[in-house]
Amino acid sequence: MANKIIVNWFDRLETVLQAEAQLSGLLSHGSTVGQAREFLVTRVLRTILPASVHVGSGKVIDSRGECSKQIDVVVYDPRFPLMKVEGGGLYFVEGVLATIEVKSTINSAELRASLDNCKSVLDLAINGEHPEEAAARIAYYAEKGGITEKEAQQRFWYMYRPATYVFGFSSQLSFPTTWTCIRDWWEGIACAHSAHFPLLPRVITSGEVVGFTNDGRISLTSNAGVSHVMSVFSTNLRFRWFAVHLMDTVSRRLGLRNFAERFEYRLSEYFPWNDYLAAIRGADTVFIRRV
Image 1 (cartoon, rainbow, N blue to C red):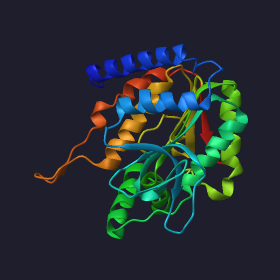
Image 2 (tube, one colour):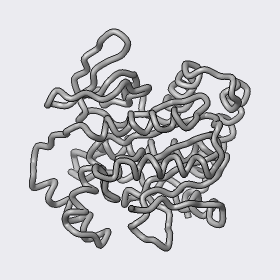
Image 3 (cartoon, rainbow, N blue to C red):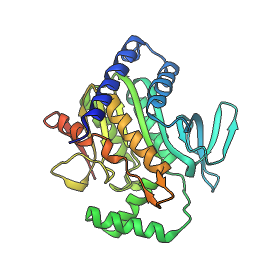
């Protein structure tokens, strides 16, 4: 059971953000993308992320000269170089903690475009310094998940890349249309995907529908086990799933080490995943499976 102080804090945050978004008109169909992005950055990200983290927009690049599509929000580690350009920046993929596609009101075309933008980040090549460290982590994933070495390699390189997210404040899509759109998009890139490197965002919110990717770290239980790729469910608590996942991702990526004792702090115990998973059990949930 998670710390009740933390659960209560997240519950209050959810209530406050829902009320502010409602007053701002972001939960209806009349707001603009600019309003949605500003609200997400100033009221959500700045509430949950360290002050030192850079938040901007632009394109993500890799060492081969490849470039992502234009990204609405880039969460960046300021220890890495940043190349500022007109209209945003060019971000080294190794320094990108997360990218977020923001929509005021999402429809099928915008959902597919957002998924394409996220894929353009995950398609970039990423460099690592010490192969033996990667090999140790791959062995960990294989043992923990009961998967093959090849599958563990795919999971490692997926997790090593930036986490991607789609956040739509409101939606023109029904629950069945939302998950069908995600499933059809995913199956349409069958030649380029794997259940362990799915090219999907970690979390998608589309109005009152949330999609949560099975990344081997945090996942919803289904009869299909590891063969399901994403769990899609109805909930009006959109902020908590996005906020908790992003906080976990950023804290793990930045690293919180006690250098005097040469020991890493672990913050995952603060995040109330089990409470949130229990809250949606019994709700309508669809599992997008491997084709």
